[in-house]
Length: 126
Image (cartoon, rainbow, N blue to C red; front, side):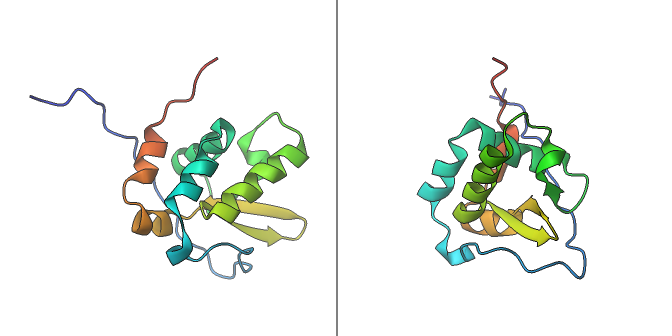
């Protein structure tokens, strides 16, 4: 019987440019924990951030403003920090701004298929 489930949207990773600042503190690949990653992704806003990075990235990494989220800066800072501390995203400091990207290779190595599920997730339209 053929599957009626549509394929997950493809996500791409852009090559890491030369001369990047060092990443902010984050867990090592071997320290990534499924319960921590799933916990941080249980928040719909954080799930939206990761999905947007996976499907719509225009550059290697993005500032908070690129997401177009109508939230206070302090709230966004909290969410981006939670994603980084869980090991889902990598952040780098560029002067006064921080830019983020998904740790695709690291997450795929530890939890194969997880990011495909995130990419296939459909946000609630309410």
